[in-house]
Image 1 (cartoon, rainbow, N blue to C red):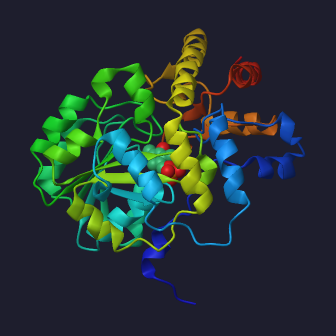
Image 2: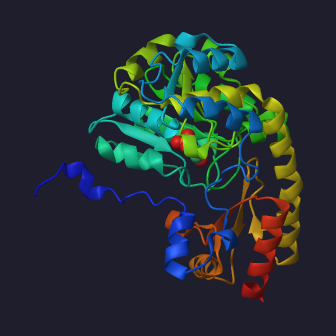
Length: 364
Ligand SMILES: *Cc1c(COP(=O)(O)O)cnc(C)c1O
């Protein structure tokens, strides 16, 4: 059977291995499995969210509120923008899909960092757009600008802080960069880990309000899957000037967010204390990884997120990741990104201790 020819070049996205698969493949008890592979919040979600969703569970016959007014007004208040500036997606993944389908096609190009979030590539392939990549491992805006002038892409993705490397772009430099970009090129600022960067270093902090006010060609993306602890609920958002949001809305399927997810995200947004507390613990625990890397002579990239990348010179990252997996420790092998490295989500103190305990024998 013939399918859309664009699909031929797509390799199915491989998400972090779910706990359920490790249970089945290696016969390890779920309680003995630690998943530090998808950058979820290891402290879970605010207890207020768990309380609030109970009422929803009792009443699920009706379709969700498709205006998403509660969540949109919460986001508008948080970011000091108007509701008309916001689109909500089933994860910010879905907003990335809308953006690429709205703006790119077989004749257009998309510019991204060499190592970055894999979904940009996958959605680009959906529409047959050509992806141009910089050479540097970390974002280098001069290189981006050079490729922009040569290639005239219709979309530029700036992922800051970047997944899977953890580096972040200086906020002022990013603004100066966008000032030089023609307004028919859409600049996507993917801030999936911005809550973490903001705490670690103010010079990396980007506010959607300023971006949207100054630029008619920028969209800022955020998600509830990381710092807010709602990976299982699938809620993300895009913030941009109204005319961009209106175009993206044409691609949105109705009821793309469930009632449960809308309520969970709305309530999570109100409990900022929970989020800030998890971020604080994240950076306290990250120090242990930095010290570990130093002790074992492993290169790391300074991380503004809730994960850390360990680069190997004497070992093979896939072998290390496999050996850890067999012991119930799920981390992300970055061999597929052409890095001999693994990415580890910073877990709870106990989870991190377990990681060190399991990896040490593999390195000696
Ligand atoms: C996790 C992540 C997203 C989106 O996550 P969703 O769960 O789809 O909201 C987007 N960009 C980056 C860089 C991410 O790491």
